[in-house]
Length: 618
Image (cartoon, rainbow, N blue to C red; front, side, top):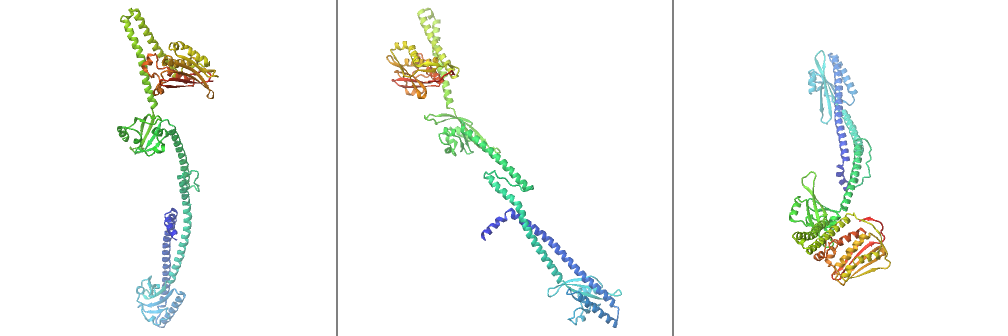
C-alpha cells in the first residue's frame, strides 16, 4: 500500500496522467454544463406544462360553472349538484395529481370541494391571494407552495364570469410530487450517463494518452541510448502526424549526431596521431596554467611521463626567468629559449618554446595556452660549429696570408736585391701558398663530399697491394725518422670493392698523422682482417706515437680541431684530414673508429663492406 502511495505522486506528474485528468475534466465539465442546461430546461418545461394543464382544467371548470351559475332557487340547487358532479368527475379523472378542487362564490365561500373527508369545508372561506385575485376578475393566477409535510404543490385560481361580472372562482390544488419524482429519475438517468461517459472517457483518455506518450517514452529511451553512445537503434514512425514528424526528426538528428561524433572521433584520432608522432613537443594548459595535454616528445624533453605531468603547472616545469613568468601569466610571452637537462650524458638540451594563447569564442578571456617545444640543440651546435668553422678558416688563411704579405713587403723594400735572402723569402711564400692551396683543396673536397657531388668509382682492389702501396709512399719519410713499418694481413683477405683513389687519400691522411705524432725509433703497423659473419673488412693503422687525451677523443673528427694546435700547425696540417677521411669512409657505407692512449699510441680502424659493387654518389 505504501509503495502505491509513493508511486501516485510520481504518476500524477507524468504527461499520460495529465492528459487523462485533463481529458476527463473536460468531459466532466462539458457533461455538467449540458446536464445543468438540460435538467433546468426539462424542469422548466415540465413545470410549465404542469401549470398550463392545471390552468386549462380550471378554465374549463370555470366556463362550465358560469353556464350553471345563471339559475336561481331550485334551478340553482340543481346547478350546484350538477357542478358538484363535474368536480367529482374531474377530480377522479386526475388520479393522485390533483389533491383538491374548490368552487367559490363571489365572497370566497367554498360552495363545492372535492374533499369528502371534511364536511365543514364548504362552509369556510378561502382567503388565499390567488383566490382574491381571481375574485377580482384576474386570470392566470398561480402559486407554488410547500405544505407542513414538505410536499411541493401548485395552486391555480380562475374567475367564474357570468354576464360580464365575476360570480365566483375555481380553485385547484395539485401535488408536484410526481413531477419531481420524474425529475429525480431524469437526474438519475443523466448521472448514470455521466458516469458511463466518464468511464468511457477515461478508457479513451488512457488509449489517447498512450498513443501520445508511448512514442515519447520510446523517444526518451532512445535518447538515453544515444547519450550512452548507442546510435544503431531507430525510432519507429507510426503515423504522419506531429509525433511521427518528431520521430523522423529524432532519427535524422541521431544520424547526424552519429556522423558528427564519428567525424569528431576521426579528427580526434588524427590529432592524437599527429601529436604523438610530432617531432616537436606540445603542451596544452587550462586558464589556470595547469597541464591538460602533453605529447610523448614534450614529456621526454621534460624528463617525465605523460601521465605524471597532467595537472602540474607549466611555469613550475619550464626554467623561465621571473620576467618571462610574468609575461606568460599575462599572456604576453610568445617565444623564449630554455635549457633542459634531458640528455643521457647529463648535458642540457636547448629548447625553443613558442606560446600561443587559446581564446574563448564569445569571451575576451583566454581559455589556456598551447606551448610548442622545439629541440634546437643540434641547430645551436651547427650554428656554433659554423661560427667555429668560419673562425678556423679565417685563422688558417690569415696566418699564411700575413706571412706572404710580410715577405712580399720585405721583397719590395729591397730584399729582392739580395739573391740568397730573396730566394729564402720566395721559398717561404711558395710554402705558404701551397699550404693555402692544400687548405682550399681540402675544403672543396669536403664540400663535394657534403653535397654528394663526388662520384665513387668502385673497383675490385687487392688489399695487400693497397697496403704495400701506402707504405711505399711514406717509405722515405719513415726512413728519415727511423720508424719501422709493418704490414699485418690476416690470411684469407683478398680483395675489396672500393674507390681506390679515395681510400688511398684516407690511408695517406691516417699514415701522415701517424708519422707526425710518432717519435723517432717508433713503429707503424698497417693491418687488415675480415669479419666474415658481418661481411666487413677492417683496415687498421696503429702507431706508437704520443697518443690523444681522452677528453679530446669525441672531437677528433671535427673540422679544424687539433689537440695541440700550435704544434699541428707547425707540422703543416690543416686540421681537415680526419674529417675528410671520415666523409670518404661514410660515402663507402663504412665506419671509422679511433682508439688512443696518451703516450701509448693510437689505433685507427676503417670498416668497409667487402662485396659492395658499382659506382655511387658520394
